[in-house]
Length: 441
Image (cartoon, rainbow, N blue to C red; front, side, top):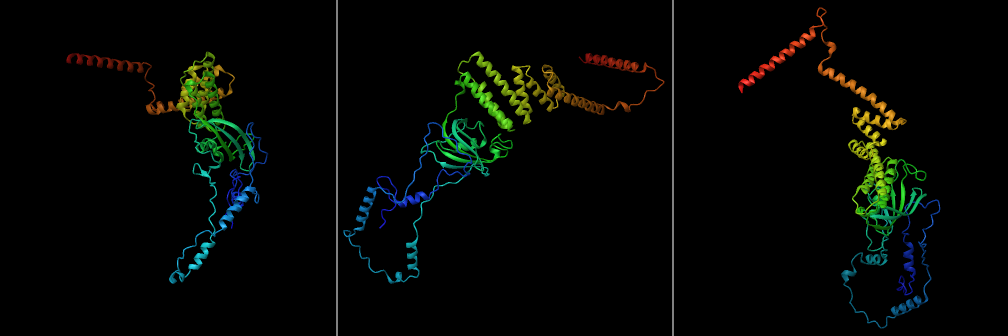
């Protein structure tokens, strides 16, 4: 009668009905992008290969068949069942209703609803369609999602839109929310569970932008990222870091800032340099050696100089001036800090202050053509500014060229006598004022 179709035997084999439905489901590991043209990289050591499980139609366990036959025989034997109760003849009015037989026939022929397939919808992370995420393998039950500030480890496979795999990193470690990686990862990983594998499609503006990443990623390239979130742990306590750990952390943040700066993303670059300086200058509860302190100071100077360069690109002149001043407090003869400070003052129109600073930088490195060119340009601008100010003052005080010419009959003593007369009048007025004040008192 087919009652046992679609049941699972005790040995674990699936019946043909279940096997057919299982084979009709789409594989969960199917990515949205084409398969890469080149062979995939071997799995890391210690990771077992995946096994392919296949359900064959018509192959059943012997015990399962016997048990199903017994069940069918028991269900076919209806002799012991009590007879059905006689419900009587249906009313004539109901039997003669129009369309009743057709409705019964359609109800009998209506197929059973098929089970709903697993959802494979794309999640539009930003709502603009440029950054989307789809779960390929969900995380285990009870797994949590990472939060900002945690250190996460992911397995990353990067491919182009045509399916060409360009990069694979089995153990990529970064701090979530610190802009250590491209924005596509920083925005999508917080939406994943630990143990989950997801496909992320991202526009070039959330990846490597118009510069790309030579030689594998061309400019303006959209990417497909297959991400597996392995672990998520809390970030380190800065106060408990040793000197070498501080140096390593600050160096990583500085290198991230340099990568952002090369892609002309100066906002993210400034953020990374700020994080590096924070790691260096935060209070410490662990003693450090003199060599470690000197190494941290040298690293702080580099980060401040790079931060000033990023702020100068963003036209944040006050912040850039403050960063340069902090560098010069530690190293008064730092040429880069002197040069950038001079440029900041020049951008603010303070030529009289910028020129001496650039001259000091040129004195430390006379062969630097960049400083020499900047200084020459500022000297010309300063001269033009002085000419403009002089003309403005003349306009405010009156143009001397319009004053009447001197009479030829007057001698050279005419102007001194005027000055003497004026001085005498002022002196007499002062004496009279003093007498009046004394009389009132």
